[in-house]
Length: 280
Image (tube, rainbow, N blue to C red; front, side, top):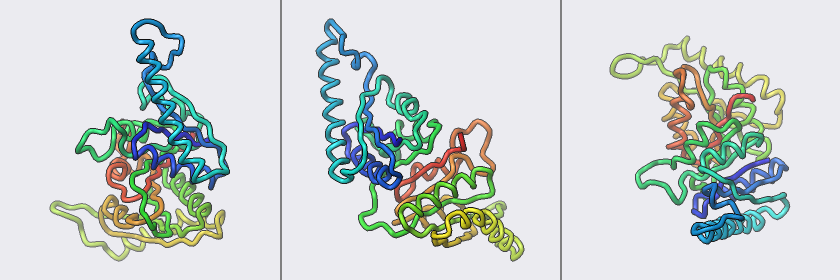
């Protein structure tokens, strides 16, 4: 099942529309959820807050109905259910998605703080959900026919490619596998040495080999870039249909819930972003 959080904002509706398309591709049900304070979900509440709680529940159901109308209008063939979730939106979404294959959120909700690149709910879910997370900001009007995957030498690269090949195959798109590397020095980067470049190209080919065998119909473009991975991925993903990155990359500091590259892409990805988590 795919879970998508909606809150009545434009970002939430965009997330619902994108999630509906993903559910249709995967042939899986979609669940639309809206979080509100626990006390507001109690229909047998009494006292002064009872009327407020009833009003909040009605508002929540209106939000869900709007999202359901969009979803059914765009993907009438998928199975859809809706539900109100009690509690903080981040914790509620993370808990609801515990057994899901994917949770989808918009980049900003109604409570987004002006100036923040991504909302706190979106970031919290991307960082802490156990399943894969898709973060949907404005979808390109005419996206380039590519899925882009960020590939490094870390143990999570295999999981990233599992997801990216599957998405490219479902969408019948080209997969662009991007590996960025650099040799840091004071004041900048060292020029790439010939042997170093060849080693990186070989590493990428080795990473892709088994996946290509399992997905022979996917056309793959290999791209090895000397430079910072964030800049390389932003450029490669501009106008793409989807960008796939790992939750934690090579060299991630102990205790970080997201690697530095995945953190940066949560804030700066120029297209819908899918954060592939470790195998559960």
